[in-house]
Length: 485
Image (cartoon, rainbow, N blue to C red):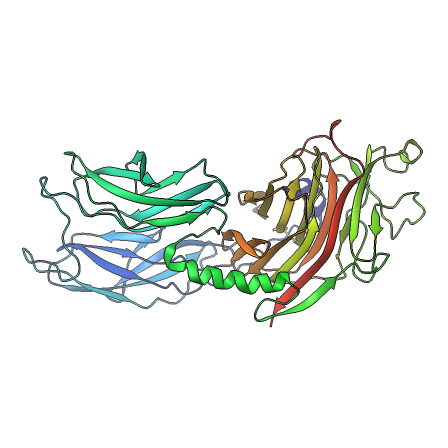
């Protein structure tokens, strides 16, 4: 949800100074130099973390600066056969903060007309079938698609690749990646790749990768065990225990019959009369205006329920003439955190025009104004929970995709929704299962506070219609926050 766009005019007035970037990128790792032939080398490495984002890389060859590039691989050509070359990488950001040189990777090129000791030369014999593609992996996207990647063939006779799903041919591509769409959520799919040459020869099928669209955002066979271990830790948090190495720093179990004013505000910090995103509700400030005539907050001793209703005629003038009344809670100036794990157990409201959310927003006004949307739920799309990250860069809004976590009808029962916020990384969970991840150097590194609300109408959900149930009920069992020890 792009709440930041609507807030920009208000919050950017609070701070117009740009923050100096003095943070160096982390040291580059996993540098790999591999001989292509007797005169060329492919160098690759992992993208490091940076608080703003890496701009480029200086490549050092044999201890001396050689070239600057802006991707995480480089092909060095016109080298001398039989010689050894060492490669190290230095990353830098836009502020020209340079990290230290990485560990080097060495490669010795074969002598001219001699076989390489590191890898066989590309198959150029037009009568020879190509080798099967290797290193096949997949990333789940939005619960109904999977993106495949594999190691491109070294042969110069490759025309492209045939894609097989569940042992059936589905597509031909010329690049070493493919997006398989239209998949069913929570179903296993088996993928294999076959290389094809220009003269009609085919490799054997690659090793198989199995993808479950409900599993995670990095469904790679070699990492499955790691992902499952991480999920098992986070399932424990769903049962009331902190993730391993984390401690509880904020909790409301909503076991009382009124709001805990030491933890919550019942208004946004920009006030009730400023409506964002074209929404149609008025948020009743129960704490500061107890005599308004209606409370959107209900308690049963076990849950908090935020309700939305049509505005009674006698309250319309007090509600800024908005057609609906609803509620929002924030911990602004009462609880803030920097990195950690936040989880809510809730039953989300179904209905056209309903927009419920749990999110984090920047505690202090600045030019970046980050926002982490832990869960957003559009009431007429009951099987999709959305996860998004927003921030401003040079006064322009930047947003991740609105990642989708497909599942059952989330309005029919209680589910847990969580985010694990780490330097340079966000991981979203539903019912303790990793559903989406976002890796980026621009992930917030500042104090943020919690917000939970039920909006009605707006540019994303549209307006309610005759099918929308009122009162609409957003039922919350608990909200908890943990920080790493």
